[in-house]
Image (cartoon, rainbow, N blue to C red; front, side):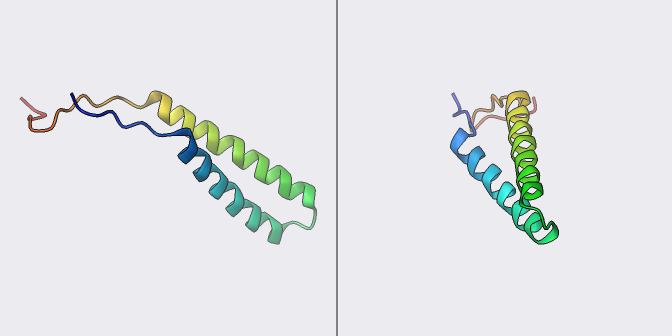
Length: 72
């Protein structure tokens, strides 16, 4: 049986934090108020995390076995 590829929660959080810090850096230069930067970072964190979780949830498992043809 083929190995199933699973996305770990740790890798999702790393990508979410990278996206959040990127938005935070842009917002820091764009806004004068620190609360707006925090709001932008919070919204980004939630949206990206929920997006990754939904994509993981709806992802189809591939039952492909190495060495066999996919089409018959």
